[in-house]
Image 1: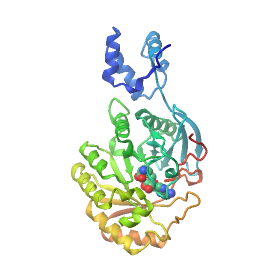
Image 2: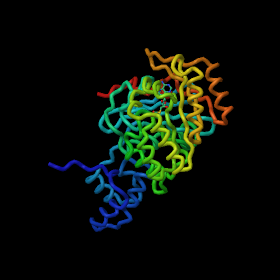
Image 3: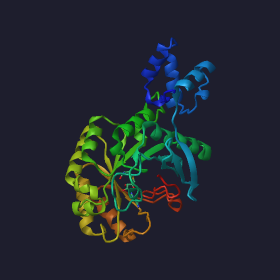
Length: 350
Ligand code: SAH
């Protein structure tokens, strides 16, 4: 019986160099392999053309490269592309390519399903199956970069962790993937072009600040009133707004970066002056800006997008307090690719 082959992407550059040395080969072969894996995003040993045929066959004998496959693509009339991504164990997540003027943004997933229970989000209706691994997150980025080049003639420019899952519940792998995406020996993308969106987990926001991350932070706030937040995002009972605010102050002090709040206004939930005032007060505590996101219906639920007049009122009061706010229109709605709609509608995880 032969032992199962190890996934080569579990090894660091140093470990690969050591592996070749032990085989009596040159250590720099390890560097070359690492470069094929993490800089070029190659999934077959045979494509590592600066290695001899023998070395490639040798690697193939000892290792595998587990990788994702784009299983299905749907294209929206606005250019957005939604990908169903098949993982090596058959599970499925979704990633979205969003073309905006001369930029391309990848919206990537961090978990199969989600552990949180936001009442307005389609992903929350799925069970959380597992965390994605570093390479599974990395591969989504590479796949969307290829699509951007193929369909729009330009490389991927931005990444948002706003797909399925709560990225901070998969802290090590999400930060590990960002490291591969940003490091010069990886894809070399600027961390300034990456935004991690979290529902707001205070301890882990502080940890990110301590870990010296360079990317941007978005927080799905939706209301600055604790009681309302507990109703629409029940996990918030364990993570009160006061703790969240405290962690965001810490984030700003340590990183010097501002925070973006994502905020949907719903009829009968947060469409009144009390909520507007609470948001303005909340925003004043930490340098921040607000994205008012359009609500994307997820089927039979009680949530309705508030009237445009209310959104205008929000904009007026925020702007009177010198808080930058934008109204973000949804993309890819016709193919269920917009915020909160990712639910593997055409695929089932079993
Ligand atoms: N779990 C992370 C990442 C998801 S990001 C987070 O909560 O931030 C997806 C964004 O879309 C979040 O701001 C989320 O609150 C928002 N969202 C979820 N469902 C939505 C819906 N049906 N319509 C509009 N936005 C939604």
